[in-house]
Amino acid sequence: MVIQLKRAYEAPSKSDGRRILVERLWPRGMTKEKAALDDWFKDISPSPDLRKWYGHDPAKWPEFQKRYAEELAGNGQEIGRLREICEAGVVTFIFAAKDEQRNSAVVLKKYIENLT
Image (tube, rainbow, N blue to C red):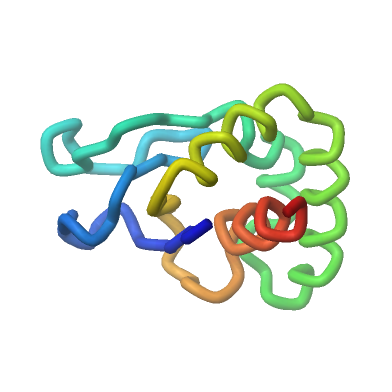
């Protein structure tokens, strides 16, 4: 299983494999053509309440990871679908956040990888 992470605003490449948007909201200013997505798993992203609470505040990062993992644990059907896709080949989770180290795609990647 190979899961990569990439900002939505970076150019797609063949090495991305299957490109999956893992955000609830469509990236601002991004067209469908530029995004070059294969899937959009919006229901697997953090809940609106959690997203608003976190607000990309680095001080809240440890607690955000815990709360988001709890949400993921309660979303078994979508996690199962995503895991099957990830096991089939190279996948790139596409995210919009500016912070490449502390965002929901990082937590999701770790969560999926720890299931195997």
